[in-house]
Image (cartoon, rainbow, N blue to C red; front, side):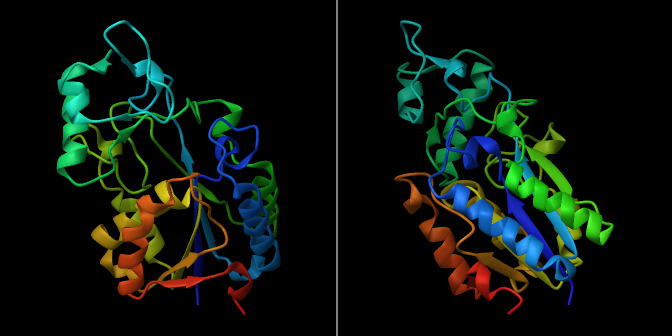
Length: 261
């Protein structure tokens, strides 16, 4: 049996208490991920880590928007299509695309657009893997003579990119927003794919949804590691329907101490 780990966004800004968008519980999640990797080095044949990576002037950051008096929205402000149409929030960049994006999200039944604190800025400490996980990955690489694979997402500033496999609203002119079939094919080489990371409510949930929607051949191989992920505070409900669908489609859910045992 060949096993792969898919670790979503285990980065400083999400997993360290001083991070810009710390997810409570993420430090302990990272400890468990690192323990898994160290204890089962010989049974893990491939590791993919994803890296949420943004510019400052991202559509989900405060500086992208302003109200009629020039004030920027506070983090955790929802921006609805109705609010944009009423002029309550005005995009400062690429206005036609930005307004269309907000409406396309809602028309597709996805999350309402939401403003986050600036996080995972390209080149910053916040965008780096948490040290505890990185140390475990380096040891795994040395012992297995294999490199872990790092996949960035989120650099296109006009769409959120929660799930690793596709932007929330793909732009046909921007390849990095399209479905990442190469990554799907890479994971399909393995008998079991263990999914974990941050945050359970957002990027893990959306990565899972994209696998359910676009990679049915992987569904029977998926194992969600339930104690290696945590929700953004107060927003856990956003992933509920995704996890319910996964249960209904017989995706396996296990805790870390049950893996390989």
